[in-house]
Amino acid sequence: MPKFVTIGYGDQAGYERTAPEVRDAAHAHDGEIQRRGVLIGAGIIGLFAGAAFFGVMACLFATLRSPFLRFAVAVIFATPAVIAGYALVYGVSREAVPSEIWRQAFSIAGGACAGLSALARLAESVAIRCSLASRRGLISTGKRLSRGNAERQSVAP
Image (tube, rainbow, N blue to C red):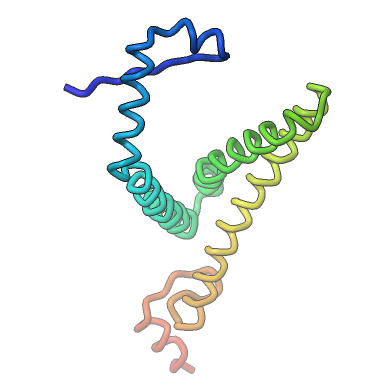
């Protein structure tokens, strides 16, 4: 049965209040995880999961015709980027910006930029796929055609 121990030190006093045997066991467990390379494996799995998520979202965005559903897919796709951008700017500006109001303003702007960048990447991917499909005769003027139908239409007078 796996055991999970979380230690929220918060500060040096919290670290010192934690029982030494609990701290030692936690440090030994962290060392074992690093020795076995679990962190590298988790990073590789995260990379593949991110690529699969992008592929699924791009395909959904390209195939869905309802504007509401396309908007929902775009929001689902961009939300992690918005959160990551906000957290990154907040963490970096914590030491540089003394005012909490300005720190929040910069963090919100960073989240918005990251989210808009993710949406642009999604739209660009869909535009490239649609461009390639139209060159191959798979789609034409917004109508979905099979390859055989496209050839028949181009030959017809």
